[in-house]
Amino acid sequence: KTTLPLVIATWHVKEATAKAMEVLQAGGNVLDAVEQGCNIEEADEKGQSVGKGGLPDRDGNVTLDACIMDKHGNCGSVVYLQNITHAVSVARKVMEDTPHVMLAGKGAKKFAVSKGFEPEDLLTDASKKAWEEWKIGAKYKPIINIENHDTIAMLAIDKNGDLSGACTTSGLAYKIGGRVGDSPIIGAGLFVDNEIGAAAATGLGEEVVKSVGSFLIVELMRQGKSPQEACEEAIGRIVDKPKKNYEDFQVGYIAVNKKGETGSYSIHQRFSVTKFQNGINEQIQSGFYNK
Ligand code: SD4
Image: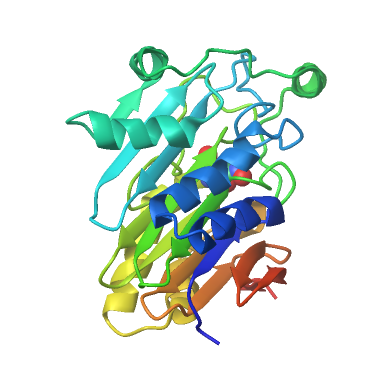
């Protein structure tokens, strides 16, 4: 049941997990697998939460957040990146080609261009139209599992048991210009510890940042919890607070441990994950807290 390699990702992204598995099966490295898997979603204009075609902030700017982490504990991240589709690949370049972990905004874009990434307009007609319609009421209210569907976070483990992870998003639609979520924050949107396991998040980033969710899950696994138990406890840290209005937002976690056991859990129903293992690439409904 825990045969390796395996790939797990947030939401329904079978093409992305298939790409990652293809890389692993061809003997490619696990970092390439998660990067190329995420690249599929970044290029897909129909996905309005990631890369090209992402919904903009309230001023009409598409701004991307992404990070990547390898089996050695190295990481790279970009925040508020504009005009470059493959944010995860830029994050990887930050990790590999600079002495830094995180680049933001103009500097991140300039760096990407210097590395050969082509600037392009990421605001598609469909996303522009959605934004123009939103402006009529201009109410900022992230919708559970609808506009929030699609930050892709992907974790993979190769046949030797080595781990990597990546996470990429255009963030919450109609956010205040300049807002950065959890997805590029190491330990919040993603954490990989090759000795223990890896975890990643989707949903309302502010709540993930406040509870340092992905790092928490990896630490809980270090203490002996299964990936499933760890994801459930991390959701518990968000919802088990006096007056926490979790009815209004979603958070979903995925996790994998060194043995190749996986887990996923969310606050509300209909958080699905895609898992590719033993030749089966399947969408799984995760368990949830708010019954
Ligand atoms: C964020 N966690 O920026 C992201 C949003 C998300 O699908 O998951 N969207 O807060």
